[in-house]
Image (cartoon, rainbow, N blue to C red; front, side):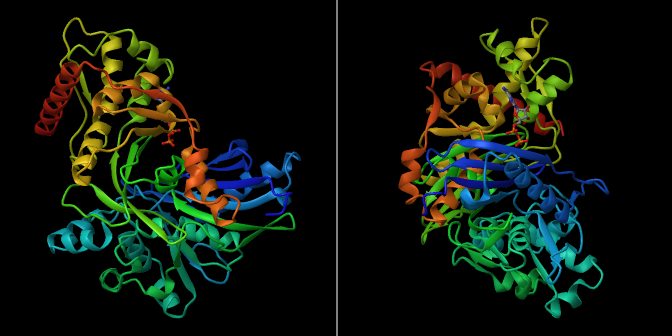
Length: 496
Ligand code: ADP
């Protein structure tokens, strides 16, 4: 690595915003970052679309702002790492690189009915065995089928080799490299429901089930390597790392050992646990997904998501119980416990382990003595309790205890939340020094891909935490809290 290379550039394309973050190679701390909102349109109830060309321009705008600041020179950047919202899918023109239709977002439910039909045909077991996923409109396969069937001329263009497809990472790399690289990494591929995670290949049976010609799909690559070059200000910067957002945060949290587990507390909460190099596909509601492939070494992960996490605190603010989300910590610390109040935040249904999209939120157990503090505390506890259930499910599925839970994301700044979380799981919770483990993970991958970082061992050495939360010794209280929670969830589901 020539001496003048001082930085890694991470590009983080999220659901609501995209950002470019420059990391110093010396200590992997962020030195400069810019972000841009990424708009979405909702043409019909449950439909979510984004403009892929616009996403690319906005991401490049963030990059330009970093180098416009004059403090940094593109020639000093050793490599680019990319991370992205997963599952969203794009079709584009091979020649121009322009999207041929709006990008269908991961939240889009337009294919939900079609998915119900697949389930009725009894295809669930085959699909879970091959892909580790449950049949759902969330994953890319049915979205891509919809795009091909509903974009005029798409099938004809695909047959003539004029149309390409892929998840957003694939599209962005294609644009960044001027059409030289049509690739996707294994983690993004594993979210499409077209990729066999056992043999790490696009699956012929699934491609024909969804009517997707294999020739329009990207070549699948490892997470770190040399994937093409982006020209910026006359400088060619290699793209050397790619991973979907949740896998990138697993890497950013240095979860490279079996049983290493992380939770990203954002709007929702995403929990991933490293299960080692052999995929275990269970009948539980947990997904099995590719965690990473780096230097030929592969790892799989269990994944469980909680739909409403930080959003619960946002809601408490919106209804006027809090003046800011940060205030939740102080308000909830003012009471010893929630005094029997439970908030079951099924605003958009419940994710793992319940998978019920129809139930709605409830607030239970109030008395005339219930205060604002109790309700806010019940909101915070609901995040920890939901994540705790996923954590326990993963430990059962792995058949061995999990390690300390590594926390990141916006709501992980709330110390009380993490302290309750430690009580609920009966294990340590460790908060990552970097709030944004996702872009850090992309930067680590790019560092490995360009040779500036030796490998995962070096990431483990470099990784650090800013706080550790120990579980309480009062086990009885936690058992009561968890029992009360289960009863509250049952009541919420029954009220549906
Ligand atoms: P996303 O990437 O999903 O947009 P972020 O990681 O930026 O989310 O986290 C934002 C979420 O975290 C919001 O839902 C917000 O309500 C919540 N949040 C942020 N700070 C705190 C805090 N100090 N305490 C509790 N929740 C918080």
